[in-house]
Length: 167
Image (cartoon, rainbow, N blue to C red; front, side, top):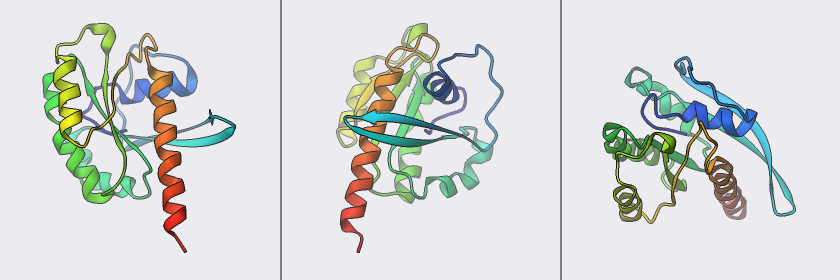
């Protein structure tokens, strides 16, 4: 999960993995890591979720965490146009390290009321490779399960395709 600081990446991960929302969170330093097993049909898939710090001062080492990534969520805060306008930079940074990784666009903090029009964000996602787009609320839990199930599916498909290509 990548995106500017304070867009709610950690809150989304905590909501999904622990089923809770903490109103005040401390800044993620470097990277946070969670593991959760989900069901994809008859298969149990173990997700390793990396929550990468969004502050600029951590930029120099982020690409180290992108290696081996199977799916990436580009997360922005629906109340922060600046975080939305940062998505092209995040997309470029990730694709420079992992060129063919599947991406999704996630607008978080839906409970606060979107300032960035959903149609604008969805249009950007479509223009940048037909990326899946979803709005979530870590606070209320809106679409959080759906988001991570989708990520699990994309990661599983990518893992399977990489295994098919390998000797």
